[in-house]
Length: 462
Image 1 (tube, rainbow, N blue to C red):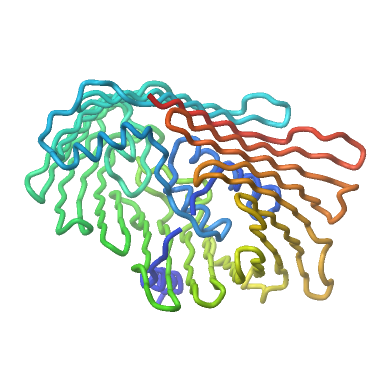
Image 2 (image 1 turned 180 degrees about the horizontal axis):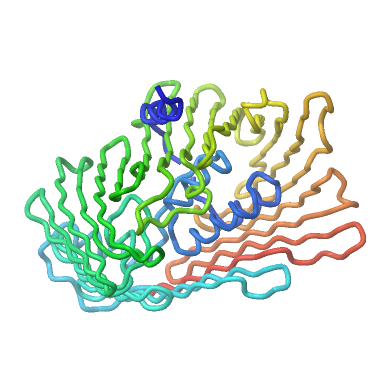
C-alpha cells in the first residue's frame, strides 16, 4: 500500500479534544520565537483579518503544534437577550430596532505604516443582515431558509472547505430534514446543493459546481461531499480531470469525564497536483500533498491538574516523495500559584531528531487577577550541545474573562544587553465596545527601542 495513503488512513482514525483561540499576539510570539516562518505568519494574519478563526485554528494545530479553539465574538447584552427570547418563540415576529456593529482591523509594519486594513459595518434588522465595507452582502433568514445577495463565500455557502469570494445570489430552502440550495455568480459560476440532517449533530450534503476558471480560462465541473457529526467534519471535493480529490478532515474525541480525561484530535488536508478552481487554501497547504497533524492528550485534574499532550505534524510537499514529520510533547503540572511545565520538540523525525527545542516554564497566579510567567527556550543539536537560551518574563492582569493586559520582556539570545523585545497585548470587551491591541518593540545592542509590528482591532456594538 502507498505509504502516503497509509498515513492518510491513520489520520482518519484519530479524533480530537477541545482547543484555545488564536490571536494576533500569539502569532507575533511564534514568529519572533522562530516557531513559524514569516510566510506562515502571514497566512495566520490574513485569516484572522478576514475573521476566519476556524481555519486559523487548523494552522495553529499544524504549524505551531498548539491546541486551538474558535470562540464566539462578544455581543451586546441586549442582543443576546433578544436571541434567547426569540429562541423560545420561533414564530414571533422579530423587532424592527436595528442592532449590529462597526469593526476596523489595522496591521502596522515596523515604520508605523498601515500594512493592511479591513473595515466592516453590520446592521441586523427584522430578518435581514446588511454588511458593508470589505465585504458587501445583504442576507435574509427566516425559519431555516436563507437568501444572500453580494459577496458570497465560505460562511454563506456553509462550506467546510474555504472558498473564493463570488459576487452573486445564493438561496437555501429547507424541507423538514432536507434542504436544497443554489448559487448563481455574476461570472456564470453555478452551484446546486442538497443536504439531509439525520439529527441535531449529524448531517450530509452534496454539491455540484460548474463555471469557468478565471486563471486557466476553461470550463470546470466538480462535485463536493460534506459530512458533519458529533466527532467532527470531513469533506471531499473532486473536479473533473484532476488526479485526486481535495480532502479536509477535522475530528475530535467526545468529552471524557474519567479521572484521567483522554482526548484525540485530527487535522488534515490531502490533494493532488491541483485543487478545485474555487477552493481557497493557504499557500503552504497548496504546496503540500498531505498536510496535517494528530494529537493525543491526557488530563488528570486530581493529580495537581496535570496535563500531558503529544502532537505530530506531517507535511508531504507536492512533487516529492519525502515526508517532513515533526513531533512535540509537553507536560504541565502544579497548583495555580506555582505551575511548572516543559516542552520538547523534535524538529525532524526523518533526521532522528538531530535538532530539538527544549522549553521549561513556570507560571504563578500569585494574587487576584495577577499572573507572572517565565520560560527559557534553547535548541539542542547533537554533537554541538545547547544554544544560548531565549529567555522570556511576562506579567498579566485579568479582571474578567475577556478583559486583560499583558506585557512580556524577551531576551532572544539570553542577554538583554545584546537584544531585547517588548511585547504588549491588551483586550477589552464591554457591552458597547470591544478593543484589542498587540504590539512588539525591539532593541539591538547599538540601537534604541523601536516598534517592530502591531495590530489594532476595534469593534463598536449598537
